[in-house]
Image (tube, rainbow, N blue to C red):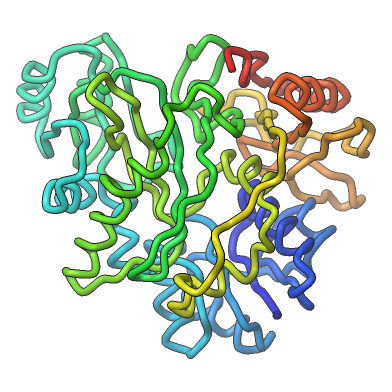
Length: 410
């Protein structure tokens, strides 16, 4: 199978790593890729949000499968264009990707499908936002309705801060706060059938102790030893299957991965958000543990044959990933600094590139906010965590920061 992955971040490096380990994959391409991806796939310079460029490349390469990694190309209709050219594509249509592209649309679908989620109001004026903040009370949750790379959400007890975020956005969704530990569950979907992957937990806040602003994610781990028994089955029955059923009823079948961000409240799991793609950095740990070859699963989703696939299998043990972020991330990250210490030097640890590039001398430099994602593995979470942090300690990036408490409580 010849596979083309679209994207340039840590999620796409993790996807390429897993696909490269699949004996069924004979050729692996990525567009546009990054410095790390270039070591496991052939990279191509395209604009990932341009449906015509992506489709043209896929046709020229003669690939059997296109895997769209990030949300922006999906919302731009890249998957639609690829499928229209007759190439199987893993990723939802532009219309179905509105589950992530519009928080208001996602709420509408959840209400119609009876999916448990936070109460919410859609606001387009400061007056509406003020009324919604007063109705739900603190802590305040204000979400930019559109795409914001995981940084469009403000959760705060400061009403002025919440209102300022609402005013800075054209349209927001103000929600009630959901209290409880958070879980990420990915479900592979082919339009009618859905299969869960192993749950993970990520860490959104920039600093230790869940302090600081929201980010795209500063670390993750799997499995979750504290998760209630039967959680995956409960979420599939109450959240995933009703959602893809509602989308199918609307004539927009969902093909790809549905990411459910959940809060385990006293009243049971409730949806915080949907994403229309693999989460980053949860993908790094979930795919590390996945024993089933990845290409066949993704191709089955793209061709409507997922029901014929055996259930995914997982390796024993645990995986922990720690994100190394550039100076001043998430506000205005500094780019262009040299990254050193990337050589594999710790047993049971490896480095996933997220925001990297090569300078004119062929050296790896920072090129984004989240620069690297270091994955540690082991027989349990403590061992995996120790391996990850040992490797983190050998990497040098001026001004960088990372959280020291990823998976500590687990």
